[in-house]
Length: 341
Image (tube, rainbow, N blue to C red; front, side):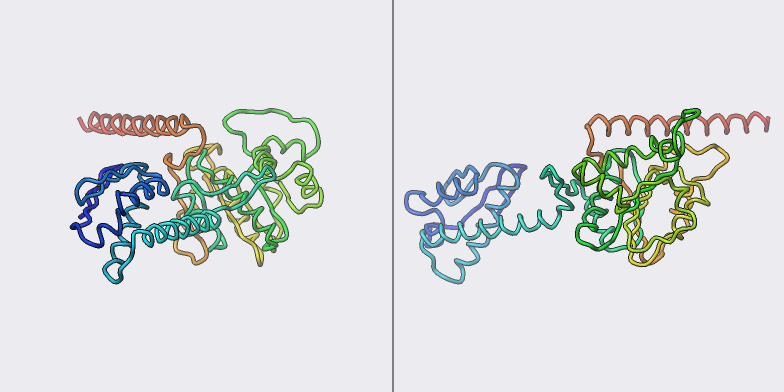
């Protein structure tokens, strides 16, 4: 019988028989060995073993004990053979975990830093991108929507699954008027596209990134520049899609060519379009449901991987918006009742 707290398990070995002594060893020598290789504290108490330590390590050791007890039901093992089996068990488990971690790694940057999903939603996002032609990643800032999409794009390029990467954004001012901007067209739109450059330079050596940009292997352009094109064999990311109009969203989604993959990211709580405009992202989320090859992944503040205070700020704003909506509803209802009087 096994009972568990957060960091403790009590495992009853049954009785003082051959199985018991095969597990604990002479003078509890196996107990001390298990404690060292599994990195847990084991306290023998009668026929019971009390196991304490990191929750994952305790689970690993209890899994080993269940396995070895089952094996002892079928065959006779000496204390030494149980120790050897423990070592083999641990090597096999750690090997499996390393393989799983390697499978989750999306990209290794030029600084030898691995990029991998950290939350369940991020894992589902990566899996959705691998399986579908078009994926919408929707949620608050700091959840890794664009960053992971960029990593997947570079991974596809590296593996020669696509020939180029196209990164695009609507050129919409975020709640402030920038006025006249000097320079060429590219220089005028550059401030709007700067976050995409930042993500790129974080993953790829600057010289290599500049080479790919110069050769158009990676293209960063405003959404309006996508009109009239057909994008084949490309990994295309539309960032800040909540600021795309209905017409722009339809135009963008119909640019998709053969061998291409598209990721659309946005936060529908931060729409900077004029009030008369309707967000193309909001409309797309509504009308594209159920289409084969298109998937939707919704992020929340639980998926924020920036500074912890970002998640708290998002929660505070969401609570404020809920309170404001309730207050406005109350004012409308009060006004209606007064008209009735």
